[in-house]
Length: 527
Image (cartoon, rainbow, N blue to C red; front, side, top):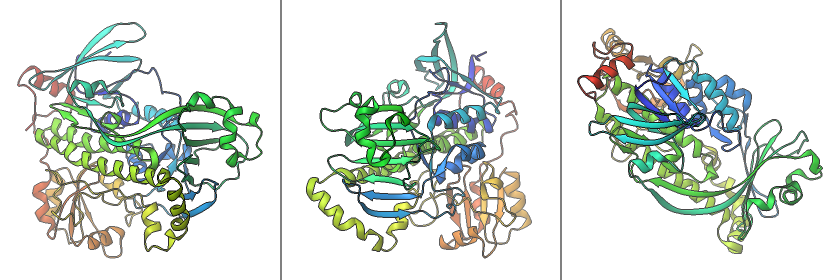
């Protein structure tokens, strides 16, 4: 049964919405998820995520299940239009700084299935599928009224929410409701996306193949035991309908399939996508927020589109839970857009740059790529930079005390380093604030950190976290629940004042009931 009043409504049960709902469930926040599909949308879409997002999946409790449905990519090859190798960048077998492989291929429907199954572990979260949201209305006090229709019965219902997270995709009703518009970042390309299943051995190198050609740029990658993905830039006048059957598709994919008979190649999907670079002009209006494709569209050349939405969820949900608990003031939510929007824009800019390098320049561009690409490995540090999954630091906000010149650790993620007892940092932090220090911890410091619901991580010389602090020219770092460094100091005691206060005594463990009383009685808002 759907409640009439709920602290948080999430619209959309794709990877972003499911991640946001799971994280809220881990904090015990009653959450209603509304999705127009009765079950997982069955067709493939995203196929790549990095070790930072893998780390987030581990926090959700799905790392082992994801390992079973994914495979690490071995690196990147740059090819010319004749599929001759221009340059190759190989990944080692070591885990990345987040404790997982740095590039991972997967099938999105399988990922969504395991995220939905995992969501059932959280009794405070309700998922309603086959439900169409038809209207969103926000009161002057901030509460949000959501009207929706059961698509199987045509029954209409409403729910009042304290906050609404719009994870409802590129055609977002939430975005239209708050009067936000997509700002075009001047990149539009039409591509054919092809997924094929086969039991045949294609005998291809199991990294990403990037064909750099202004006439027919392409990408090839293996994404599963018997699943393969191709992407081809469409020529003027071409559409996906031109390649619906294997007879017409095979000439495009034959350089990789060679002599595999057509009847051994099963087309899972062919679709036309217009790759765009866009970002919403504002991501929030009062208690309504935009996440994922509702807020930004990233060209796929660096495989960060889906990951950007999951980063949105990780950034916002812990803050929202702390506001609902009374541990943070409501204005702390301003930091969501302040941090995520510049970060997302920088990733979109990088994706545009890579896409342009693959496809631009005509014959001159091809000639330059043939000359320059084979020598890229000679540039000091470039191979590591091309394969490095690290993303930019978050901009300064009320929850990131970043120095003006961007130096230091603030805004960066704390590594999910292995600790002396075999656990990793995230196992110990477990979604809480953490104070990481190489200084001796006094009993008073230990007591203060504990009383504020945080965890103290004391590191010793020779360990990965000690080296991390040393490279950051600091002795102590305050790490937020999303793994981001909020601020650093030479004296760990100086960081205690920035830990959120414990929940007020009047906030009950049944947060949904307590929130309902605030709506009906004293009004909305914490802090």
